[in-house]
Length: 230
Image (cartoon, rainbow, N blue to C red):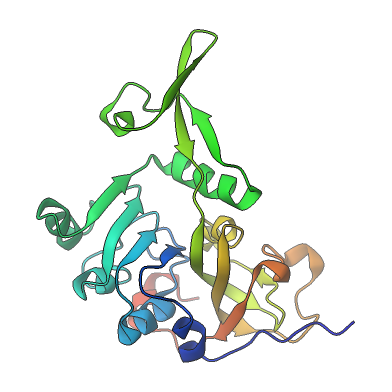
């Protein structure tokens, strides 16, 4: 059986994202963030987006470009403290922000990829973060019901990919990307290197190709990738 070739252009890959889409964006600060896919989403101008990302990057880079362009209505994240612009937009009511503990965000995404409806946790059960969430009691202990997260599209960054979409990540870029690749209807990857079929050894594959829909090969990395240049 011949495996399909999923390589495509940057423009075509991103053009499938609709207004109002829920978009997962990989990355932990700079490592693993798909800056080129984000820039193309800014250029194409889709609006009314809900973003799910560990952080809001810093002002003037990454998802902040989407915020500045007014394309984001809602952000589900663990923190925005490095981005004064995002903080100002939240305080002005220009975007809605839902905060999650970092491990809970990762687990909600993992649950979405596993087909679960929700997880139970005692983290934040008696805090403001759980004020509007369902809580249940088991054996006398209170738990918060944290709903699973899924998305219409996931944008992820990989070190290398083959045309079928088998991926490997380097160092801390292997953060939210593998989880998000399992939790979205459509998964677009930007890869620093495109390997031939069979170019990735089986033991080196961190995300298998069946989860990936579009593969975009990067050229020269922009200055936003500076701290992860190898």
